[in-house]
Amino acid sequence: MNSLAYALLAMLVRKPCSGYELAEMLEVFWQAKHSQIYPLLAKLENDGYLTPENIEQTGRPNKKLYHITPEGKETLKLWMDKAPSVPVSRDEFLIKAYSISLTDAATANRLFADRLSFYKDKVQRREKLIQEMEAEYGSHLKDQEHQIFGRYIVHQRKLLMEQQEIAWCQWVLTMIN
Amino acid sequence: MNSLAYALLAMLVRKPCSGYELAEMLEVFWQAKHSQIYPLLAKLENDGYLTPENIEQTGRPNKKLYHITPEGKETLKLWMDKAPSVPVSRDEFLIKAYSISLTDAATANRLFADRLSFYKDKVQRREKLIQEMEAEYGSHLKDQEHQIFGRYIVHQRKLLMEQQEIAWCQWVLTMIN
DNA sequence: GCACTCATGTAAGGAGTTACATGATTAG
DNA sequence: CTAATCATGTAACTCCTTACATGAGTGC
Image 1: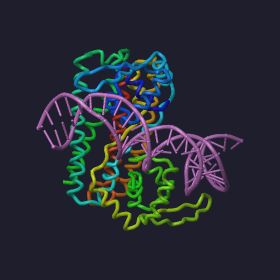
Image 2: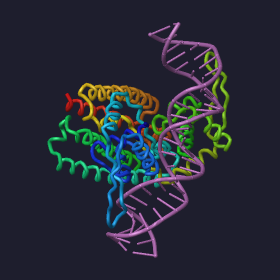
Image 3: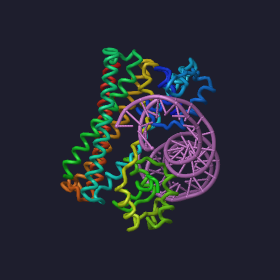
Image 4: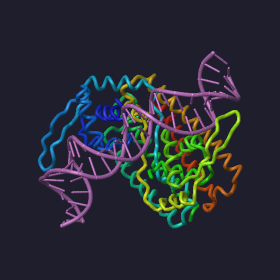
């Protein structure tokens, strides 16, 4: 059981998902490629933490919805008590930002302008997602007992980070222009 | 040449460093263990991007200061033009925050309280580091031509992120208490 | 026609972590 | 007297990415 395994269980507590969906949803705290996810789902099924449900679809490929088992949920619950490992963030952009004096004004500008638009897009998507949560759950979002609470606060955290990235890029752009 | 190799070159443009020092300094954009750094430094030396200087010390182990070569600096410069790969962040804490409804109030509280103090410590260290930069470089910090500029903006970014993490933890704590 | 989305998998290789190894000095 | 800091390295292993493989439907 590695961190990704717990990330998958955490997602599946909310609702049954296919590997394809999980790969998208994991973006919020543990990015992983499908090539890592599919074998791990098979392993978790084999260990009794998940059960698959085959969904036949027309017009698109069939899929497997994985459901979390009581053992899976219990395993995740027990893990909650352990101290989380230190967060890891690896960002090539920051290496380039650090080395900005090595490059010309045009390259520096492009670097930050691209970063800015990348995060503007991220913010837009995140705001839409949060609006959808608000429409569906309303005041339950602030109820720590409700299952949605965890999902809400995590996406709020990500939104804040993305908004701050935009503000910081703009701050740097005013200095280099 | 992987991202970590460029991260090392970026650090060594500023000043010659030992592998030990680099492991600490890399925290800001690309965390790596010494077991990954030492072999890579040897490889970069072998490729002609670095030259080592042996420093004999009394009262503590001798060390190797790596200096970047003109070829190393040129390689880093050329890399600046390429679009950076997408940032990766993997944070076990966020998996637990997402699953907060599975656990009791005491565990949830401890989880966020620990996170809060972890980042309070981070902010303290970062603020001290930035104050030292201000004392040494003053108005040069805002001069995009100056070598310190990149280092300054990156640490500012990290400080903002850490301060925001504190504010967010406090926001969640008010909701769960 | 071409790229994108949905959908699942395997194989090979590169990146990163943990453990093994050594050892003096300093602070509590 | 115990833990932390400084300091460098290797070995084994796990984790993660890239590439290979397949294929129908949709939008430009």
